[in-house]
Image 1 (cartoon, rainbow, N blue to C red):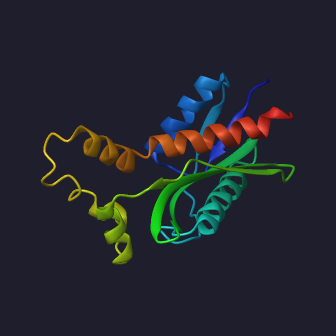
Image 2 (image 1 turned 60 degrees about the vertical axis):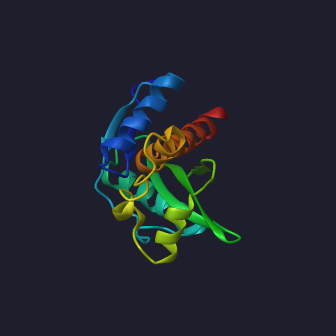
Image 3 (image 1 turned 90 degrees about the vertical axis):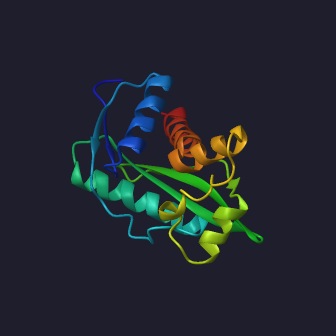
Length: 171
């Protein structure tokens, strides 16, 4: 593969670092150009459809901003209500200059009761993460769940990897 450039629709160091890790693990060398673009969906998407649309919007906008890039990638973390409970997941979308569009979702993780309550109260979950571990001293499982929800790595990594593998498998 010749010199490859990716326009990513975020300036989040966390998301960009996870994307770089995926690229390294897969063996793709690429220049990654970040873009401060809007998802044009709510700040806390609460459906699979809205989260997917946010990732599409970010990929399109990033590619539009960096016209010389080979692909645009949008990464959107969101929530989806499955029956009565919310699940956390990520959607990554790749769009190229030919109009090809590939979206992939991570696994869905049912949020703990504390997080369910915050979302059902209409609160922005990212602003209410600190209370989860109160009173749960030395509970390694709860600490790991807190880490996963805060850092979102398994979701972002999996969605990006799936999108990239799907995009390149028939190339």
